[in-house]
Length: 295
Image (cartoon, rainbow, N blue to C red; front, side, top):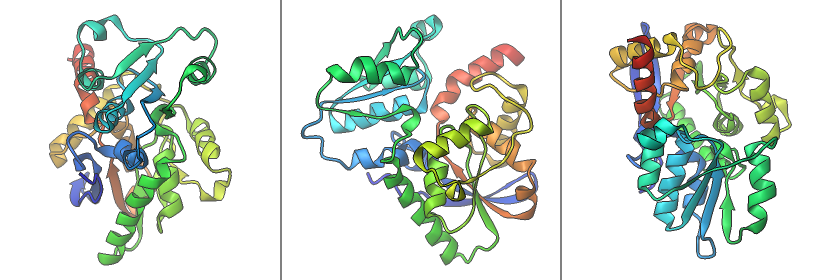
């Protein structure tokens, strides 16, 4: 399985034609932006590697993708989390459930005043050998390897189909995918912050590239949102997307992404190529939360 060359569909949403890069269909097991971010590691020789170490949320898309990667490469995965809700432990679902099936070792940590990253780098890595360490969400320079391939696919499609006045949009967590896409794409990349605010996203960009002239354009969200919190308009957007396009999108990122995009001048004045980054496995637990709160 190559995990590249996803197709581009034409869809209609809110009476606008939108081109959709279907990275959600790369593979049932290894898809979306994490497949692109981790493509470098997929192609490495693991002869001297026994373990992958990372951290994040117990429902993170990266947890599931890394569990697939470790399974494919036949190595262990230690994934550190700050807390696992008792309900999730008793009722595994979504990314957490599937990662456990793949043999992931999900470890709760007591980190006191340290961030998860500080704790792992100060307390865990010093005692480990023969491992690969991947920061939360795949915010690593190696992610450029797979994202460059994604950009090349889009550049080729634009030329072959003679698309003019086109902009590429995707919502951002760490912003890694958007940043490396802008580096290798011949058109402007638009994004919006889904974890933290605009200043947080700028800081993420700067960690990987200090040259702000090479950064994607950040579209402002309509209001401040807290990541992981339930918002009725997110669920309504999710349902509307499903109704109009018959395609399922991620509730955490895509709902905010589409809300931000369609309210922008860019949506009204340009052709848009939206990158579907997968992540729908996490919808199982999110939809249950929304139904419990709003239905």
